[in-house]
Image (tube, rainbow, N blue to C red; front, side):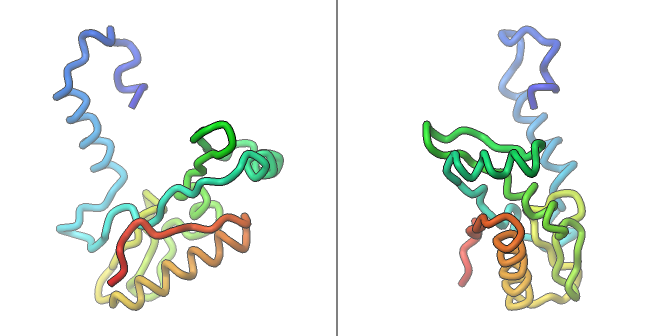
Length: 141
């Protein structure tokens, strides 16, 4: 988002311009639910202690993370999922979106159970590879 307005005087940027840019970025990364069934962002960015961030940086210097407070950091769940090999992967008609690993999609006739099972496999894989648990952002009924 910063790049979109980096050569502009901050006082000249209008709220409507920011809103339109956010919509444009989302459209470029997220599938349209009218054409590809999805629930949007499926997993929350996990919060981990500083010691875990230090451990991760030693292995993956490019890992995206964000400071929450003096002791905790958020790690980009999409990055974890992608690095665990799930981005673009299908299990039957349930899959992880090819452009945004946080989004689970229905490529045809996947059932809710199949999407749930896929989410559990993603969670297990990320936990196994990184020692970081993922919580679902969606509500499972």
